[in-house]
Amino acid sequence: MFADLHMHTSFSDGTYTPEELAGHAHRHGLSAIALTDHDTVEGCERMQAACDRLGMEFIPATELTIEIEGHEIHLLAYFIDIRHPRLLTELAKFQLVRQNRIREMCARLNQLGVPLAAEAVFKIANCRAPGRPHVGRALVAAGLCKTLDEAFQRFLKQGRPAWVPKFKMSAASAIALVHEAGGLAVMAHPGLNQSDEVIPALVALGMDGIECFHTRHSTATSEHYLMLAEQHDLLVTGGSDCHGMNKGKPLIGTMKLPYTHVAALKSRVQSRRPRAKDTSPIPSLAPRPSPLDS
Image (cartoon, rainbow, N blue to C red; front, side, top):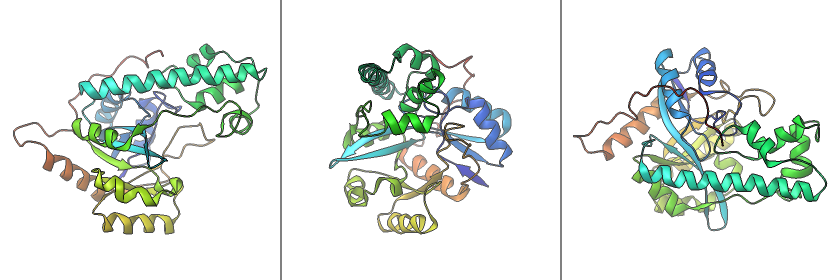
């Protein structure tokens, strides 16, 4: 039994719907999957329903951007209550910041003589948590760039003229929020961050785990973080970081996490919950008809 605990849908910067992603996961023989869309849990209801139909286990999650000691870190939040009031309030704030970031990027492009309207980006995104890939796709759709890679290289990468800094929540606040919502806080793709020096500080704040296995981690990198996980008594996760066709080809199926790690995550979650309460990740929910407009 294997799992993929890091994937994105069209509710953030992926291209697959929850149903399409669940279908691909099933065809790859995965037993459990998590949806980690950026700053939103909107796709979780539909992913839960799709997984139920296919006989797969679903883990509700999201991916937050945090800051600690000047480092930007992505934090995966697993087994969260997707109806938790304060979590939804905070996510709504992050989504508004994301939408305003798109407007600022388009304003900078316009100043450069690139006539891209923010509404064109929102139409392509069709979600509440738009990001830079949506700007890139809009540039390509408008014929202003030939490829997504060109859009990032010319305009959208850090240091390029249309790049706008991302909002980052403090690590302490983010980890506390994840725990308040009943979840586990896990450092995403540490091999890409090159920020090992902040791991002890994150552990001191209550971080629960680290993503040792990732599509862009070499075997040596994964072994390095497995060692750190053991050293700091951290849970181990892994995922493909699939964004659908955004990066040319889907990454789902390229990284399969042994289910024993999922069992360890579930055990940690259940140990924190009062025994009298239901320990299921989320209730069975009906699918939504379509993604929400931004």
